[in-house]
Image (cartoon, rainbow, N blue to C red):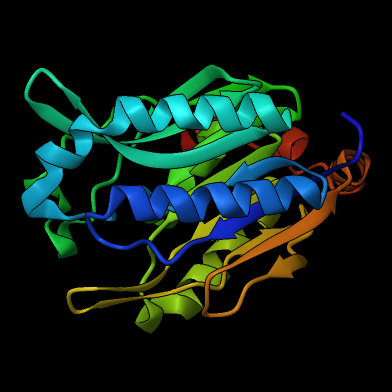
Length: 261
């Protein structure tokens, strides 16, 4: 892996308005491509937000949204990551898609559903951790609430992930948790973390922004504010390897003491 520019599109996702959300996403994808980005993460449910009572309808539009993602990825020669609703055999999943040069490199169904917000009443949970091979390296994929489960991040790291991509709609009142967890997942797994959060509001929820790119040492390379924006930073894979060599946490693990993890 060579140095490359990665970024996050911190979108104000308008609930249920797929056309407007796609218009905004296209603007930011184009803008970040002009800034040299090769990897770009979008928020959770970026085409529609949650819109629980319209999930069947908005999930029906996802194949069309994916075709646009493929086209943007081909046009800008960019890896795009972001979560959308997916319908299969009567169930709806929250799925993060990874598109590399117009090709689906992989998809991940959200494993941990946020029961506090009743997600489990509307979505089916995924079961399988996912690491995707892409032109920019091996991407581990997580969605929002997954960030609170260090065992999933560690599983992805053990499976070879070099960059953790997290799409989220994280509320402003727990924004300090978001920032702390992004840095923790990066430092404890000695890998880059890209956390893309939404901003704006949905019903009584206010999403906090503060998207961030974090280095394997836990340093914040770039961070967004509370408004719609794009952030970017250069990722240096050699620095990750050097840090892993300096403090060899993975080699020093004693899995016999605590099981598979």
